[in-house]
Length: 120
Image 1 (cartoon, rainbow, N blue to C red):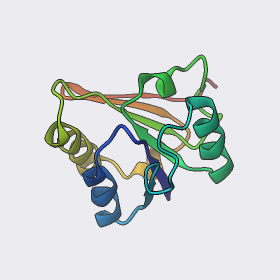
Image 2 (tube, rainbow, N blue to C red):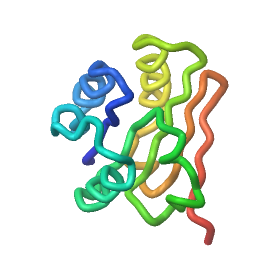
Image 3 (cartoon, one colour):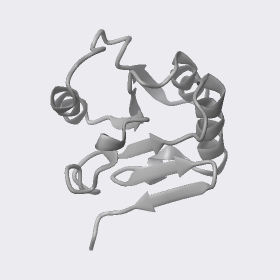
């Protein structure tokens, strides 16, 4: 599974995904830091990657309806810092194979996980 990790997440998120067997690359590694969201989204679509981000704009179902992309996972910790983000990602990885979330918008908070699928 191909995953792109947004620049607003720590390097540790990319490392954790790789440790769990996912083919993850970060926006920063691809020297795309600072790229405007529409251009970044187009690149993500061209690469057919699942996006892991903390940017709420990518989880807007009006702009990015479930089923029209490879998937978006929005991490929303209650606290700033690397550890809260990594803990949320670990929470998801403990309960889900990310391949099962392809095409959905998944919002992860300390209180739980919400998955929005394409309307049938």
